[in-house]
Length: 332
Ligand SMILES: Cc1cc2nc3c(=O)[nH]c(=O)nc-3n(C[C@H](O)[C@H](O)[C@H](O)COP(=O)(O)O)c2cc1C
Image (cartoon, rainbow, N blue to C red; front, side, top):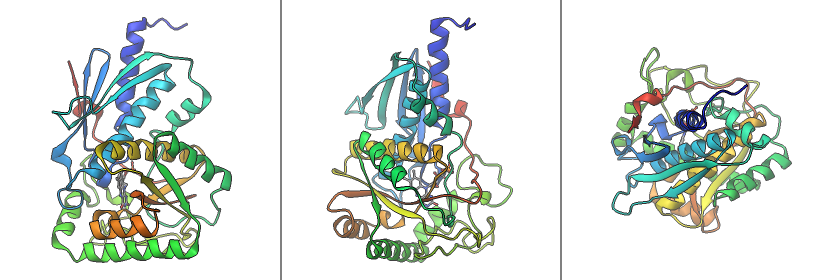
């Protein structure tokens, strides 16, 4: 028998929602968010101390990351029987206050909500090739619908020339960034050597010691090992497929659009993960305004590219770390 009081239940749901949020993906695992819990209300803020000034001066990727965290809050509340009432960017004078969320009594959670919630802690970023098993068409279509539910567009890139163009631009951006001192220093700040006890940044177990080559199209990885030989095994001969390349775009390019892109991203990733499909990201070119603009017109039909990813099945699941939720939550 459930002996919890209704109030206790809401408080527990709020706590579970914040705990889910911290598992969201974030650029370089910066975890650029903080939460305030006031009674039953959760406030989500961008933690600007964790902004990447070189790669992300406008905070676009920071807000995509926070959008993903917001989706986790919403999914957790749904799965626990509440309807989240969300006010996005509620105070124009405080742009870092991204959302206020209140749980309202909701319908019993359906299987879809529970399935997504079940993936929140399991989903991991992949940084290598995929097995030869293709992403089923029906799943790709479902992922497109999931992104659309959040006001963003996921486009699987199926034409060979377009995939080659995206790969070539990614490889060029990676090369340019690796020759740029400021980009390199910023990446070093967030990549962790083996044995690091830090709970943020990209840990050595999560990146390959040398960038893997995927076939038929190579997509350069960020060089988290930066010549130290750190990192895990460099690829798996049984899994070097490029996978399904996809771009996530939005019609506009405002903070609202970035939050929508983040929520769409996380909905896509959780749904994919529930079907055994993982994602690898290659967002280097989107950090270089000229290349981003080029891709916008050449590959994205004029929409603003927010994420470039490859999707597929992995030989083994990845690892990551998180700061404990208590470090990022203030209770009032
Ligand atoms: C906006 C954004 C951009 C990202 N860009 C990259 C990327 O270019 N390369 C990469 O390997 N991972 C990228 N990631 C994935 C993060 O590194 C990853 O989410 C973080 O390290 C936490 O690990 P996890 O996703 O396995 O939990 C990106 C994530 C976000 C949200």
